Length: 214
Ligand code: CO
Image (cartoon, rainbow, N blue to C red; front, side):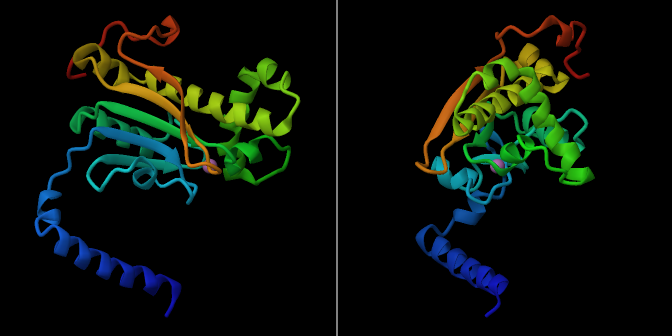
């Protein structure tokens, strides 16, 4: 059996077992009503549902390398707008993880070629912003862990800079933004940063003439 055929066969037995245990399972999932948007790393070791003990229907998910929020990323912005405006999620979670290949790569001087260089440069910008704090950490592993935490923090701030989030904050007092880092070695989520509708935002980024349906 090919590796991919195993997935299809696993799927058949999962669907059968699921309906046996709960005959209405799929009928109940006909409409999704998730409370959470998850922006995580593409890393195969960080599956959103499994590590949070949630089920299909509970988390709307976007994943990319090193869980970046980039303001020209139409994919991410579409997911964010749909989740916030239409699904009305209560929480947006940016989840990084210790041991992230993207973070490690951005800390090297290696040429990963154009597209990856372009993506990783965003992490180098986070490093530059926090260079003083990071370079005071002598241990390279601890410095990498701290960059992982600071990266999550900066991505949450990037979310708060969007008019999508600011409009939702002003008119619906929601959602809350969270920055978490997952430990590959212990399976534990570490909450490192949080922003809500009443959190202060650098006035440079604040829109002061937003309309409810703008
Ligand atoms: Co990663």
